[in-house]
Structure formats: C-alpha cells, structure tokens
Length: 279
Length: 173
Image 1 (spheres, chains in turn cyan, green):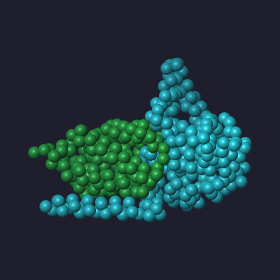
Image 2: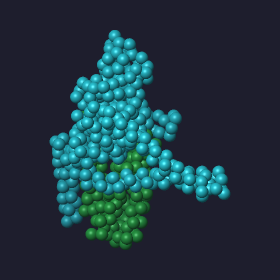
Image 3: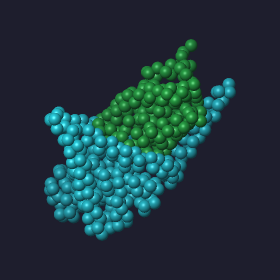
Image 4: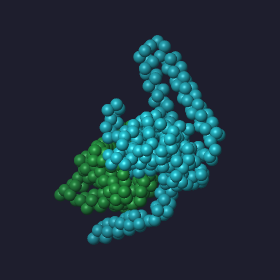
C-alpha cells in the first residue's frame, strides 16, 4: 500500500514537471536548455578534443596497416614516416584553412566571430543543425547569420551562454531572401531537406540535397551557374553574402514564377570553423 | 551513494556519446539512443526512486539537445518507468526481449512524439519515406543499443559490487 502511494507521488511529481516544462514560455525553455548545456559544456569540449585525437590515431593506425602489407621489411619505418606526414598534412590543411578564414575575416566589412563546430544534428533527429562553441557570452544572439569563407551556412537558433545551435540553410524550415547576382532577380531560398536514398554512398539520409529558390519572376532569365547572394531583406542575413549557384531552373507548375535548385557554396557536410556575423 | 555517483557518471557518458557520435549512415544527422537505453535499464532493474531520477535527468538531457519545447522526453521516459513498474509482476525484467521491446518502444515513441510536435508547429520537409526511414532507424538502433547497454551496466554494477542494490529479476508467479 505504501509502495503504491510512493509510486503515485513519484509519477505525480513527474507529470507536474512535464506540464511545467511544456507550458514554459520560449525564454524559460531556452533558460532551462541553457543551464543544462552550460553544465555539460566543459565535458563536451573535452570529448571533442578526445574524439579528434582518437580519429587521428585511427587514421595513423590505418595507414600503418596498409604500409605493413605493402612492405614488411620497411613497415615500421614507413609507418612512422607516414604518421608524421599525415600529421604535417593535417597541420598544413588546418593552417591553410585558418589563414583563408583569417584573411576573409580581415577583408570582411562586418564584425565576425570565429567559432568551432562541436557537434552535428539535434537529438530529435528531424532538424538539420550544427552546434558551435560560442554563445551569448561572446555576443551571439538568436537569428544571427552564420557563414564561412565560401558562403552562407545558416542562422543561430538556440543560444546559450557558451554554445549555439545553428539551423542550416538546407533544412526545409530555413527561409532566406536571396537574389541572382547577374540580373537582380529576387526570390526565397528554402532548404530542400534530406535525401532518402543513398545510391553513391551507404547513407540512408544524406544531407547534400541542394536548396530551392522560389518566386523568381518569369521576366528574368535565369541560367545554370548564376550566382545567388543574400538580398539583405528579412534583417537576418546582411546583403551580398554568397549562398550558392544555380544548378537547375524550371517554371513552377502554376506558371506564375520560376524556381531553381541552388547548390550551396559552403560544404555543409564537413564544417569545422564558421563565422557568426555580429550585426 | 556510490550507486548514485555511478548513475550520474553513466548518464554523462551516455549524453556525450549521444551528442558527439553521429551516425555516418544517416548522413551524420542520426544519433544512437544511448540515453534511451540507459533509462530503460534503470526502469527495468533499479528501484523506483532511481528509475524516476533516470527518467527526469535523461529526459532533461535529451530535451536540452533537441530543438523545440522541452518536456517531451521526460514525458516519454516517465511512461517507460511507469510501464516497467506497472508490469513488474508480469514481465521478466532480466530477459533480453523485454529490454529490446522497451528500448524500441522508447526510441520510436520519442521520434514520433517529436514528429507530432514539430508537425503541429508547421514543420516542413516531411515525406512518408523519410518518416519510414527514420522510424526504421530508431527501431533498429534501439534494438542493438538497449541490450548492449543493459549488459554493460550489469557488468559495471557487478564489477563495483553494486548488484545488491538492484531489484533483481521479476518472474511471473
């Protein structure tokens, strides 16, 4: 009898907690989320470092195994050389990328904040997001543009003290006002979502599907290869940021406007460093 | 006290594994349900206060890393703990099939509940094939991870001599 009463008390408390959480206003929900994420943040950054070390180690181990098969006598020496070469290549790649990003940051007229991508995807499984290691302590606010040296990546969604969730432009819920650079045709870019087949790779839900640009006027000629830029309308993305290029154009079935498939310039599948536009 | 420390540590490791190890098969957007599996383990094998704590803490962790209103995961985990407690006399909590069924139920339930919420909020870009693929993935991943986590947790508890704190197997009598 006592056990039954305890059970009821526990579940009563749980239901109450759920009701409170489900009815929290947006600001309260963000605060709850922020507290937990900030508590986990130190462990998460350690895990990111550990993951990078493990992946480096695995890569080195893979190379060593291949070299052993190729030449048994020189395997040990070769493996060591290969390992060092991989390390140097990795360092050079990082160096190049950072130099390019730094050059971009210096040349850019807008205040930019460099951030590292710490994780991909939210646990709900439906949204295309990335998480970066900068939050409102660094001046990041919701609805700020996130870019790389190549082009637009997305916009900040949930911002906690030390980290932010970024909604990618390939998510179907991402809307962004854009224009064709060549003839100033304006339109709206929607993410096209994920692909549900994987012919070329073992991927059930791939992310490389291009975005779609809608409401392009029929009076303007749009061609494959046209560059697409942000229009500056909508007050999230500053004007003139490169988004991608047109890969296909078609007249919408209603006949009222054209729509185009746009391949983003930024490689959204291998993002490591991004910039938040602090404007 | 020792048991609670192990509980907190395991929950932290599960969370880090879940947020830091995306699945390449899902284009990097999928995650293995480590926290679901841990909550299922605590629901099936531990006393009610700890199972309840696992539901609340696990739910808070998952909700914190999910876009949208928090509360859904706690609701679902609460339901899992409730069902485990309600049918404690009818199920063999040690059986592999029980863990698998509870894990699959929890994971699929989470995906579909979250889908329901975002759909009512006007989420775009859903297709039947995507829902099917995502549901299939949630079932398959839970079917693999839940028993694995169960065995691992039993081994950890056995290694640390914490088995006496467990409720032990429940057999239909």
